[in-house]
Amino acid sequence: MSQIVIINGRPIECERKPYLAVGQPSPWRTPIEINGKMVYGVNINGYDYPPAGTGSILYYPGLPGQGATIWDRSNQGRDGTKFGATWKRLPGGLWYLDYDGGDDYVALPDDLLSGLNYCTIEMWLYLDVLANSKQLFGSTWTDPFPIYIEIRADGNIGVDQGAVHRTTGGGILSVDEWFKLTCVKNATTWLFYRNEVFKESITSVDYPAIDVTTGHAYALMESPNLGRNVDGSCALFGARNIALSPAEDQNNYQLEKHLFGV
Image (cartoon, rainbow, N blue to C red; front, side, top):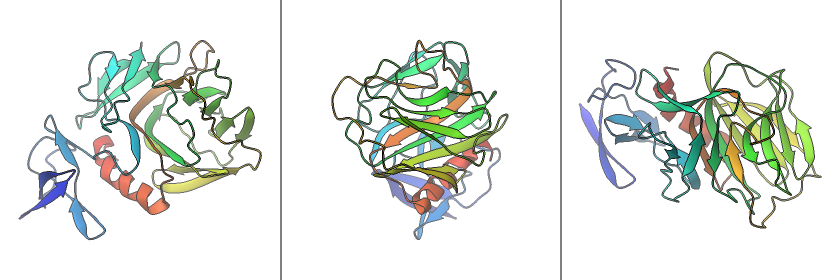
Protein backbone atom coordinates (compact mmCIF):
# COMPACT_ATOMS: atom_id res chain seq x y z
CA MET A 1 0.00 0.00 0.00
CA SER A 2 1.40 3.40 -0.97
CA GLN A 3 0.53 7.04 -0.53
CA ILE A 4 1.43 10.02 -2.71
CA VAL A 5 2.69 13.02 -0.74
CA ILE A 6 3.38 16.43 -2.31
CA ILE A 7 6.66 17.88 -0.97
CA ASN A 8 8.01 21.13 -2.41
CA GLY A 9 5.64 20.71 -5.33
CA ARG A 10 6.86 17.23 -6.18
CA PRO A 11 4.81 14.02 -5.76
CA ILE A 12 6.61 11.42 -3.63
CA GLU A 13 5.37 7.85 -3.34
CA CYS A 14 5.81 6.41 0.15
CA GLU A 15 5.64 2.68 0.76
CA ARG A 16 4.64 1.21 4.13
CA LYS A 17 7.38 -1.40 3.90
CA PRO A 18 10.70 -1.79 5.71
CA TYR A 19 14.04 -0.88 4.14
CA LEU A 20 16.10 -3.57 2.54
CA ALA A 21 19.03 -1.49 3.79
CA VAL A 22 19.13 1.90 5.43
CA GLY A 23 18.92 4.57 2.74
CA GLN A 24 18.85 2.06 -0.12
CA PRO A 25 17.49 3.64 -3.33
CA SER A 26 14.40 1.49 -3.81
CA PRO A 27 10.63 1.78 -3.40
CA TRP A 28 10.95 0.24 0.07
CA ARG A 29 10.37 3.45 2.01
CA THR A 30 8.96 3.98 5.49
CA PRO A 31 7.24 7.38 5.80
CA ILE A 32 6.96 9.43 8.98
CA GLU A 33 3.70 10.93 10.17
CA ILE A 34 4.04 14.65 10.95
CA ASN A 35 0.96 16.73 11.77
CA GLY A 36 -1.30 14.06 10.30
CA LYS A 37 0.60 13.80 6.99
CA MET A 38 2.87 11.00 5.86
CA VAL A 39 6.16 12.64 4.90
CA TYR A 40 9.39 11.02 3.85
CA GLY A 41 11.42 13.66 2.06
CA VAL A 42 12.67 14.09 -1.49
CA ASN A 43 14.53 11.69 -3.73
CA ILE A 44 17.72 13.07 -5.31
CA ASN A 45 19.91 10.88 -7.48
CA GLY A 46 18.16 7.80 -6.14
CA TYR A 47 18.54 8.68 -2.44
CA ASP A 48 16.00 10.14 -0.04
CA TYR A 49 16.70 13.45 1.69
CA PRO A 50 14.53 15.76 3.75
CA PRO A 51 13.89 18.99 1.83
CA ALA A 52 15.16 22.40 2.92
CA GLY A 53 12.79 23.49 5.68
CA THR A 54 10.98 26.64 6.72
CA GLY A 55 13.24 29.69 6.89
CA SER A 56 16.16 27.91 5.25
CA ILE A 57 18.90 30.30 4.13
CA LEU A 58 21.52 27.60 3.51
CA TYR A 59 21.28 23.80 3.20
CA TYR A 60 24.18 21.46 2.32
CA PRO A 61 22.98 17.85 1.83
CA GLY A 62 26.33 17.08 0.18
CA LEU A 63 25.20 16.34 -3.34
CA PRO A 64 26.76 15.37 -5.67
CA GLY A 65 29.61 14.38 -3.32
CA GLN A 66 32.51 15.61 -5.43
CA GLY A 67 34.43 18.74 -6.32
CA ALA A 68 35.33 21.84 -4.35
CA THR A 69 31.90 23.50 -4.45
CA ILE A 70 29.38 22.66 -1.72
CA TRP A 71 26.07 23.24 -3.46
CA ASP A 72 23.36 25.08 -1.54
CA ARG A 73 19.98 23.31 -1.87
CA SER A 74 17.97 26.04 -0.11
CA ASN A 75 17.43 27.89 -3.41
CA GLN A 76 19.24 30.89 -1.92
CA GLY A 77 22.41 30.45 -3.97
CA ARG A 78 24.74 30.34 -0.94
CA ASP A 79 27.24 27.78 -2.21
CA GLY A 80 30.34 27.04 -0.13
CA THR A 81 33.90 26.13 -1.08
CA LYS A 82 35.86 23.36 0.59
CA PHE A 83 39.57 23.52 1.30
CA GLY A 84 41.25 20.17 1.94
CA ALA A 85 38.26 18.33 3.40
CA THR A 86 37.63 14.86 1.91
CA TRP A 87 34.33 13.61 0.46
CA LYS A 88 33.15 10.35 2.03
CA ARG A 89 29.92 8.37 1.91
CA LEU A 90 27.86 6.55 4.51
CA PRO A 91 26.41 3.09 3.76
CA GLY A 92 22.98 4.68 3.38
CA GLY A 93 24.25 6.84 0.51
CA LEU A 94 24.72 10.18 2.27
CA TRP A 95 27.77 12.20 1.22
CA TYR A 96 29.63 14.14 3.90
CA LEU A 97 32.95 15.88 4.44
CA ASP A 98 35.74 14.61 6.68
CA TYR A 99 38.10 17.19 8.25
CA ASP A 100 41.65 16.29 9.33
CA GLY A 101 42.00 18.75 12.22
CA GLY A 102 44.91 20.40 10.42
CA ASP A 103 43.90 22.89 7.75
CA ASP A 104 40.60 21.56 6.34
CA TYR A 105 37.54 23.81 6.31
CA VAL A 106 34.63 25.10 4.21
CA ALA A 107 34.35 28.78 3.36
CA LEU A 108 30.74 29.92 3.71
CA PRO A 109 29.06 32.95 2.10
CA ASP A 110 29.77 36.33 3.67
CA ASP A 111 27.20 37.92 5.98
CA LEU A 112 25.29 34.67 6.45
CA LEU A 113 23.78 35.72 9.78
CA SER A 114 24.04 39.50 9.47
CA GLY A 115 21.12 41.26 11.12
CA LEU A 116 19.45 38.07 12.39
CA ASN A 117 18.31 38.22 16.00
CA TYR A 118 16.67 34.80 15.51
CA CYS A 119 18.39 31.95 13.72
CA THR A 120 19.03 28.20 13.79
CA ILE A 121 22.22 26.31 12.92
CA GLU A 122 21.90 22.55 12.27
CA MET A 123 24.55 19.90 11.61
CA TRP A 124 25.30 16.23 12.04
CA LEU A 125 28.71 15.59 13.60
CA TYR A 126 31.13 12.73 14.07
CA LEU A 127 33.97 14.07 16.21
CA ASP A 128 37.29 12.24 16.44
CA VAL A 129 38.75 14.49 19.14
CA LEU A 130 37.38 16.93 21.72
CA ALA A 131 39.74 19.84 22.25
CA ASN A 132 39.35 23.40 23.49
CA SER A 133 38.54 26.30 21.16
CA LYS A 134 37.93 24.27 18.01
CA GLN A 135 35.45 26.23 15.92
CA LEU A 136 32.43 24.40 14.52
CA PHE A 137 30.90 27.38 12.78
CA GLY A 138 31.21 31.13 12.68
CA SER A 139 32.96 34.19 11.37
CA THR A 140 36.69 34.15 10.71
CA TRP A 141 39.17 35.47 13.23
CA THR A 142 39.75 38.76 11.38
CA ASP A 143 36.07 39.70 11.66
CA PRO A 144 35.61 42.97 13.61
CA PHE A 145 32.43 41.51 15.11
CA PRO A 146 33.06 37.81 15.72
CA ILE A 147 30.29 35.29 16.20
CA TYR A 148 31.18 31.62 16.45
CA ILE A 149 30.29 28.30 18.06
CA GLU A 150 33.18 26.17 19.32
CA ILE A 151 33.75 22.83 21.01
CA ARG A 152 35.43 22.35 24.37
CA ALA A 153 37.56 19.46 25.63
CA ASP A 154 34.94 18.58 28.26
CA GLY A 155 32.22 18.21 25.64
CA ASN A 156 30.65 21.59 26.25
CA ILE A 157 29.98 24.34 23.71
CA GLY A 158 31.32 27.88 23.72
CA VAL A 159 29.62 30.81 22.02
CA ASP A 160 31.34 34.09 21.22
CA GLN A 161 29.13 36.93 20.05
CA GLY A 162 30.60 40.40 19.69
CA ALA A 163 33.57 39.48 21.93
CA VAL A 164 31.24 38.29 24.74
CA HIS A 165 32.03 34.62 25.47
CA ARG A 166 29.87 32.10 27.32
CA THR A 167 30.12 28.31 27.75
CA THR A 168 27.51 25.60 28.36
CA GLY A 169 27.67 22.86 30.97
CA GLY A 170 26.45 19.30 30.81
CA GLY A 171 28.75 17.77 28.20
CA ILE A 172 26.71 18.04 24.98
CA LEU A 173 29.35 16.70 22.58
CA SER A 174 30.97 13.27 22.26
CA VAL A 175 33.40 11.36 20.03
CA ASP A 176 33.16 8.30 17.78
CA GLU A 177 29.45 8.48 16.97
CA TRP A 178 27.12 10.42 14.70
CA PHE A 179 24.75 12.85 16.41
CA LYS A 180 22.74 15.90 15.43
CA LEU A 181 23.52 19.28 16.98
CA THR A 182 20.93 22.04 16.69
CA CYS A 183 21.80 25.55 17.88
CA VAL A 184 18.82 27.91 18.20
CA LYS A 185 19.21 31.63 18.87
CA ASN A 186 16.54 34.06 20.01
CA ALA A 187 17.05 37.64 21.18
CA THR A 188 19.25 36.87 24.22
CA THR A 189 19.56 33.08 24.43
CA TRP A 190 21.25 30.22 22.59
CA LEU A 191 19.58 26.83 23.05
CA PHE A 192 21.30 23.56 22.19
CA TYR A 193 19.68 20.25 21.22
CA ARG A 194 21.37 16.90 20.72
CA ASN A 195 19.42 14.26 18.81
CA GLU A 196 16.14 16.15 19.32
CA VAL A 197 16.65 16.43 23.11
CA PHE A 198 17.16 19.86 24.70
CA LYS A 199 20.47 19.86 26.59
CA GLU A 200 21.63 23.34 27.60
CA SER A 201 21.08 27.06 27.08
CA ILE A 202 23.25 30.14 27.32
CA THR A 203 21.50 33.37 28.26
CA SER A 204 23.41 36.62 28.26
CA VAL A 205 21.85 40.07 28.38
CA ASP A 206 25.20 41.53 27.31
CA TYR A 207 25.22 39.69 23.97
CA PRO A 208 25.00 42.46 21.39
CA ALA A 209 22.78 42.05 18.34
CA ILE A 210 24.44 40.34 15.37
CA ASP A 211 26.12 43.05 13.35
CA VAL A 212 24.34 44.19 10.19
CA THR A 213 27.36 45.69 8.47
CA THR A 214 28.82 43.86 5.48
CA GLY A 215 32.04 41.97 4.99
CA HIS A 216 31.71 39.21 7.61
CA ALA A 217 33.35 36.00 6.34
CA TYR A 218 32.05 32.69 7.74
CA ALA A 219 33.63 29.24 7.86
CA LEU A 220 32.65 25.69 8.84
CA MET A 221 34.81 23.40 11.01
CA GLU A 222 37.56 25.97 11.63
CA SER A 223 38.49 29.63 11.87
CA PRO A 224 41.01 29.99 9.01
CA ASN A 225 44.58 30.98 9.96
CA LEU A 226 43.91 30.65 13.69
CA GLY A 227 44.54 26.91 14.10
CA ARG A 228 41.06 26.15 15.41
CA ASN A 229 40.40 23.26 13.05
CA VAL A 230 37.99 20.51 14.08
CA ASP A 231 39.07 16.86 13.73
CA GLY A 232 35.99 14.96 12.58
CA SER A 233 33.15 14.93 10.07
CA CYS A 234 30.13 17.09 9.35
CA ALA A 235 27.00 16.41 7.28
CA LEU A 236 23.67 18.07 6.44
CA PHE A 237 24.84 21.51 7.57
CA GLY A 238 22.14 24.14 7.40
CA ALA A 239 21.09 27.59 8.61
CA ARG A 240 17.68 29.22 9.02
CA ASN A 241 16.48 32.74 9.70
CA ILE A 242 14.03 31.55 12.35
CA ALA A 243 14.33 30.03 15.83
CA LEU A 244 13.08 26.44 15.54
CA SER A 245 10.72 25.18 18.22
CA PRO A 246 11.49 21.93 20.08
CA ALA A 247 8.75 20.15 18.11
CA GLU A 248 10.18 21.36 14.79
CA ASP A 249 13.66 20.17 15.73
CA GLN A 250 12.23 16.79 16.73
CA ASN A 251 10.47 16.48 13.38
CA ASN A 252 13.65 17.31 11.48
CA TYR A 253 15.67 14.79 13.46
CA GLN A 254 13.13 12.06 12.71
CA LEU A 255 13.34 12.88 8.99
CA GLU A 256 17.14 12.73 8.90
CA LYS A 257 18.27 10.03 11.31
CA HIS A 258 17.79 7.10 8.91
CA LEU A 259 20.58 8.53 6.74
CA PHE A 260 23.02 7.89 9.61
CA GLY A 261 21.69 4.54 10.73
CA VAL A 262 20.51 6.05 14.02
